[in-house]
Amino acid sequence: ENVVKTILEIFDKGVNDFQSVPQVEPKLLPHFFKTVTKAFLRAPARPSRCPKAPRTAKDIEDENMWVWKHYENLSNNIQTVVNPMLEYLKTYEEYYEIISMNTDLAKEGEGEEEEDDDNTPSVNELRK
Image 1 (cartoon, rainbow, N blue to C red):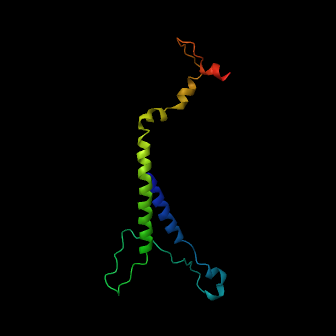
Image 2: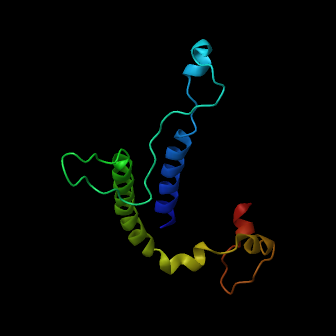
């Protein structure tokens, strides 16, 4: 769930950052532009909800409809990919306790040797 949310936030950030790109013409051709106001490129924006489809032939489709469609497509595709990964992770739930072990505690007890009833060598002996 966090993976999908993070990727969609990156998508939104990219679309929003595109809106802050300044126009190049006033900088390249200052003699044609007398105003000093900073102008930005006209950029698309993702609508907060799905735009309505035009009802008649005279109605114009929302110019940001394509952004919404790409956003929905991206969301659906990522969710399609993430679901099998989550199912795969469930196979490792029984090992979660071992995976989440605190390795710092294991390192502290590394120098201590336990006596075994059988003659198995300790870890430190095997390292030599």
